[in-house]
Length: 202
Image 1 (cartoon, rainbow, N blue to C red):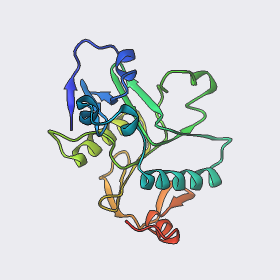
Image 2: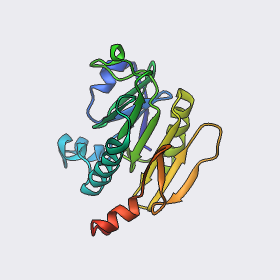
Image 3: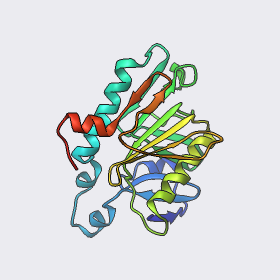
Image 4: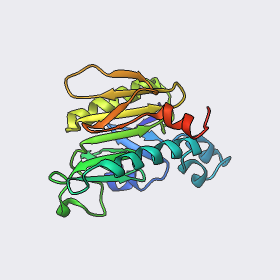
């Protein structure tokens, strides 16, 4: 993973850099494709967006949640919302589900949320990898989120067609993406079945 030790940059300065996706444990994590931006081969805008497959999967999961979740109890955030864990520790996710009793109205502002989501869902890996495997990044980030207070971290990995689930006090589960994946007790999604129903093959 491309990481860089912080060199006196503040939290505000780091999150304003469009090439930086996350920073935690004293390291900066850059977006995939950032080297091409630095070399002039691509623009920042070209590396900011999701692939059509990633967007389709996120859209599907989001629709499943919004159709069935009790929105009087939960807030559902998307569009790469940030999570401020502690000083100089900031992450992002694809879909975050918050309990409204935790993310209360007064905690919603122009800054990153500083309370733990109940559920974090990630679709694919958006950072450059160097010095650590992508799965190493998945595990380290997920464990950090669980330590912060998240109840469930779900990764959908399209390249290997697997779903990885992290919960407190348990070993990570690695499932085929044709499995029914529980978001909340009564809400599940099935990536493989959905893509088949849409005629999407990868």
